[in-house]
Image (cartoon, rainbow, N blue to C red; front, top):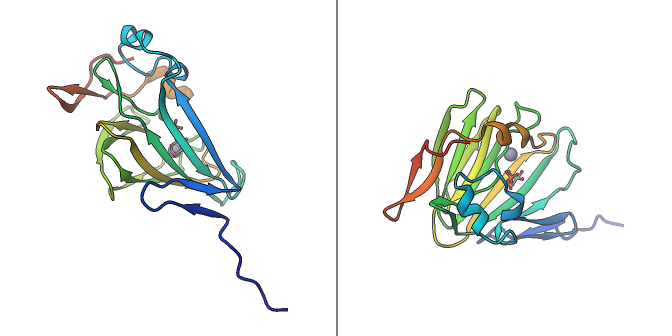
Length: 191
Ligand code: M6P
Ligand code: ZN
C-alpha cells in the first residue's frame, strides 16, 4: 500500500491568525485576572472584572516543557483602556531565560514592550506584517493602542515556559498611555 497524504493537524486563518485543530487550546484573560497590571487602581476597580482584555489561541503539537519542539499561538488584545492606559497582556519572561520568540502583527495596531533582566525597556510598533524577534532573557508584553482588536501571531520553543512572577514584582518600567488621542510611553505609575 502506498503512503497516504493526510489532512493538516491544524489550520490557521491567514487573515486573523485564528487557529483550529485537535491540539488547539483557546483561553481568555479578564480584567479580574489582571490585578496589579494597570497603574490606575481606581479606574481598574471601577471596571467590571469580567471584561475580556485578551484571548489566546495556542497550537501545541508537543506538550509544554518538551525540549526541541515549538509552540504556536495567536493573541487577540481587545481595544480598551484602564484610566489612560491601553489594554495589554500580562507579559512574561521565559522560565528558561535564554529562549527567544517571534511575534508578528496580523490585524490592528499596537506596541510590543520588551524588557531585559536589567529592566531596560524598548518598544516596537506592531502593525499587520510587522515582524518582531524577541531575544532570550527578554520579557515581552503586547499593548493594543488602536480601536479594533489587535491580533498578533507567536512562535516559541516548547520548553521556554512562562515566568509571570518577576513581572508581578517589578512590572515594566514603561507604560503605554493615551495623550491627546495618541499613544505615548510614560514612566509614570510604575508599579
Ligand atoms: C503569545 C505567546 C504565549 C503567551 C500569550 C499571552 O501568544 O507569547 O506564550 O502566553 O501571547 O501572553 P501572556 O502569557 O503574557 O499573557
Ligand atoms: Zn513568550
